[in-house]
Image (cartoon, rainbow, N blue to C red; front, side, top):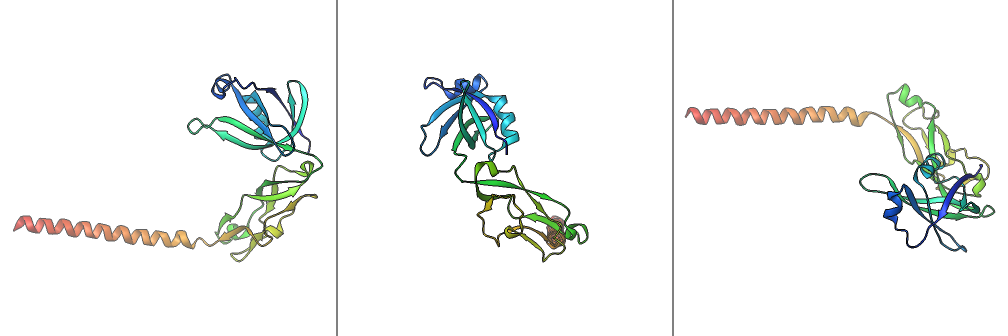
Length: 217
């Protein structure tokens, strides 16, 4: 996978996070085994566009103050609890010749016959898998075909996933990824709800009638 270039600027210790955010910059930290920690600031909109495209599992080439920097992955993004805006980013150092452990999202594709023909309900049991690979083997997502879910006894397990060369999935092979379940739960919920509602109405009517009898006496 081609790396993505992100230009950042060195950040002075005197520059406070709230001041940077007010100027439409995001404060960021870089760290990793065997490297010196560094503090950066970067244009909010530039990083937002790159992160929306790259996510957490695309190698980014940092350009620091106009000079080539290290290869990184986005480790963590912190968001403001009210506005939802990004307020801080942690970058993770990456060595292109060393394997890394990370998570890759799953994308479900196809049509489950058990949904189409049996009115079943599709359920995903996981939305990402943990993998180990060299950084240049990373992909944005792993496609999961659900065409094999023909009935309510069919499953997609980790061992059924087709992954690109160089990627090893660390989840247990028998872990469930996706199933189709019978719509029984929803069908049973309706009569129960109707019964409860009917009992509540009957109780209310009884209480009303009892009150009228007392008034007549």
